[in-house]
Length: 272
Length: 272
DNA sequence: TAGTGGTCTAGACCACAAT
DNA sequence: TTGTGGTCTAGACCACTAC
Image 1 (tube, protein in one colour):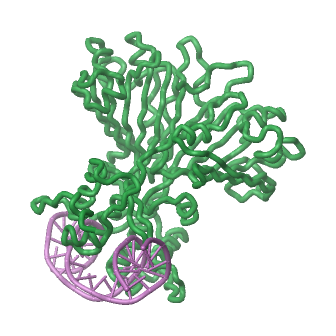
Image 2 (cartoon, chains in turn orange, red, blue, yellow):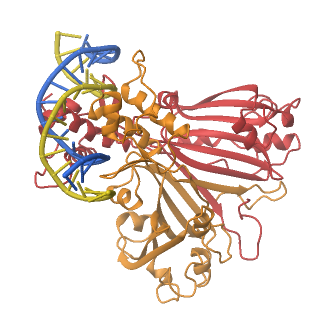
Image 3 (tube, protein in one colour):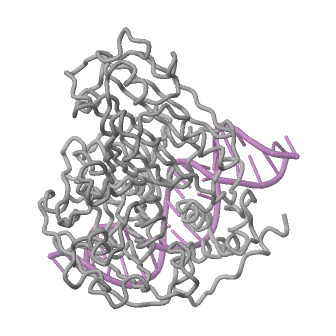
């Protein structure tokens, strides 16, 4: 327990910067300098109180500053640790008609982890938000599927999709992740029953996680999540909507487009 | 000053939810119910201490929960206010070759505000990050342009773009926002000098604002920003990069794609 | 059992804004 | 002058983890 403080520079008593920020800066400097590596235990509240002769709250707020920027993770009752800075990249499934391997698995494998996911489907009455986004009458039946995506067994993405039951009921693809086209993607599944998706939209927001999301995704306090609302459409009619929750400190989202030649007026123009 | 507390429900002493969250929930409920409207003063630390018989810290943390979710804004030494919940939508310029009006202006006008922006261009030596992303030799000359976008005079987006000087030097479009194609967009500008952009990529991250960004964009404490790295390419060569900073609580980002017909193998597939 | 972070109390001083 | 939020101190009890 002795050496844990010796890596931290002294504070500057002349500086008008608040103590919590000075302390946060000293810890961040130790991390940037490599004196603390990802996974290492960071001096927690008690060590910081002792090292800098500050109160509990001040040490706590210094750690909160670092946690908010994703530099450290506080694990309740265990300790505080330097967070891995690796960011995964989420690149949506290429929007072609091909049946394709899931992009999630590719991303995770590239990062050297083992991907898996589970999905659970239920037929439910649409809540108002869902029926509105799917342009259904209130309370219409929808197939709701909740996904948990994992890397090395740890949940790293959550998703909930809804499809109008009227479209798929009685077909082999009524339950998204079972049957012959499990894992093939919405476009291929819908193609198989004659519904031809022609447009995709994703709307990206950012917000703090709900307590349940924070617990499942192990999102540290102060870190936000991406909330992606995806919509597949066929002939301007919504076919599938999905709400995807992604930790903001571990992912970046990549969107790529081609720009058509001058003589080619149509294709990559975004649908309305 | 009497009526300010009467709009808040009592706490539930049986509930195991922490006090700060219960209090935050009561205030949020008052906002959702319309008992507090955007711009209204929210009960601050002292009123909450009195209303719920809690300590300063607990009242403070309750407000911090609400501030992080963008529901309220704390203005130092003035008070705490309900934040406007209007979210603007950022939808990137349609990726066609047409010379188009700026999407930013359209978005802001739709929200009923008056858009404007300023831009400043300088020829500089590329810093390492920029030369790497533009695939230039270290220290090569680049045209750097910094943009501030405003709605009703208030900055709401920041951007910095870089273009290799070697591409545009001596042409009429060397300075992005002046000359005949000012405001027409990168694709049209580059087309005019025979550089035909064929791919666009945006990488979206989220992080806390830097102190300078927080001050300029008036981002409340605890709210994060989108950091978008955009890249235009021609024949796989980077032509322009831009770093765009967008307040996370006021914007959502929309990405839309068309899905080609089955017989049409090429177009909307994302470039690598 | 010792140490951790989560929550909470009860104070304090400050600079600044509004009045 | 009054009230605000920002910062800080000095305690406390808790549930849980790691050993």
